[in-house]
Amino acid sequence: MRPQTSSPEINLGLQVGAATEPPRAPQPSMLPAAEVAAGGANTGPISPAWQRIWLRAQAREWNTLALMGSSKRSPHGTMHVASGLARVSAELGHSLVILDARAIDLRHMAAMQSRMRSLASRGTRAICVMRLPSENVISVPLAQVADAAILCVFLGETKVVTSSQCIEQIGRDRFLGTVLLRPTDKINFK
Image (cartoon, rainbow, N blue to C red; front, top):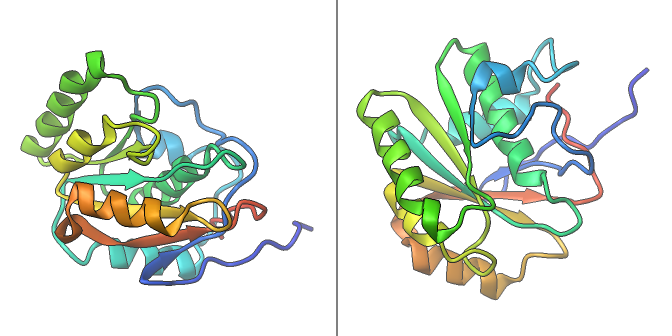
């Protein structure tokens, strides 16, 4: 039997428990969704909570989605959210690419922006995972290239002021919602 994990809940559109283990899929700067979603035992039906998160993320048309968050206790938590969205996308037969920009620097910013624009121009959906601007200022111009954004808030870690500053710096109109993550829980795709 699998250990019980908490189910994701919706808050301002999105909430999910965070993972404490690293993602099963490798983390180069770009991963096809099917590769991420195939990360091991994540087969079978997808939980209704993940389905709600996916549906809320579809509230607006987008080709590129900025997924922003940072956690010292759960450093892969934001990538796990991207993996969950990728799994739903793969289940629906949609192409989706995950771009890992968590450690991007100024030298590579233009190349990542170009990659995001290129994917969007071809109609390929992409989720760009990045840190909060308080931890990496390059996140601001990257997120502004994206069509939409989702903020990942780690309960007990992410400060309200930091979240508010992130939303203001990127542009409030770009945000679809917030995913609340509990750093002590594990993400369960089922």
